[in-house]
Image (cartoon, rainbow, N blue to C red; front, side, top):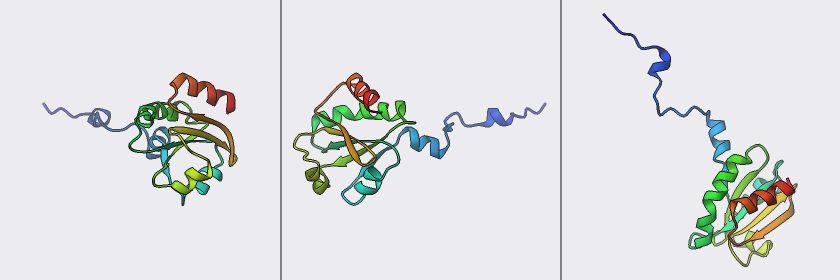
Length: 132
């Protein structure tokens, strides 16, 4: 007797069920620099929440998982970008970043809201719901 596995049972259990595009959208926090800020944030057709951060910043590391979760929850309404203030000092200075993390919501290239410091997921959700 010969057993033949069906095509569906041959599928690797670790295959990602999302297409590349869908996967990029669900985990779409992009790194933005001085050179790409205008294109990726100011000229974006979607609202963009920008996280100004630095590698050495503890609260910045603490807020990162919250932003990952929000990038999935708000994937149809919002993009999230990160700007390393040490590598992109011109952009940080332009927006008066003095404390990090600082989150700024841009809509149509205009600042809609700003939040300085570590905040809870619920606080960020409330802010985004009010402004989107």
